[in-house]
Length: 112
Image 1 (spheres, rainbow, N blue to C red):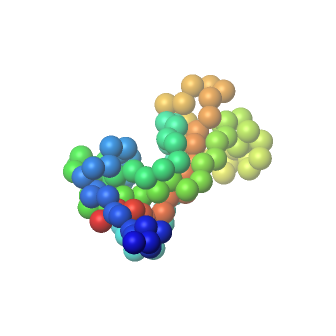
Image 2: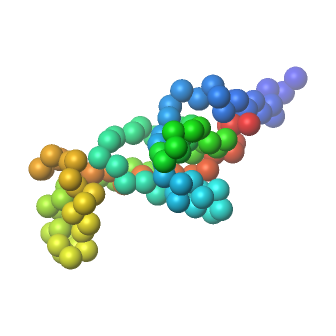
Image 3: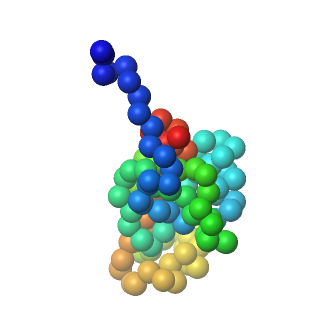
């Protein structure tokens, strides 16, 4: 038997990593297969089960964190200018700390 041709898929309920995403981003991921996330929390690359941030319910989908970027408020203002930076995103981020930008892809290769 050739094991390289076998594909095993994980049941979505068995994914232990959870990512809270708002309804708009969930809809965007379902329609286009990808979306982005901005967070003051750091998440590792990998597969995450999606929980709706608005109602706390788990969605029947998973996403793969594909790319991660980080920047400080001061660095972003220096790069883009103060008028281009939403200060509201930084209210929970201590001065000098970074905020993380994530590229998410809808996961279908490893999840049923």
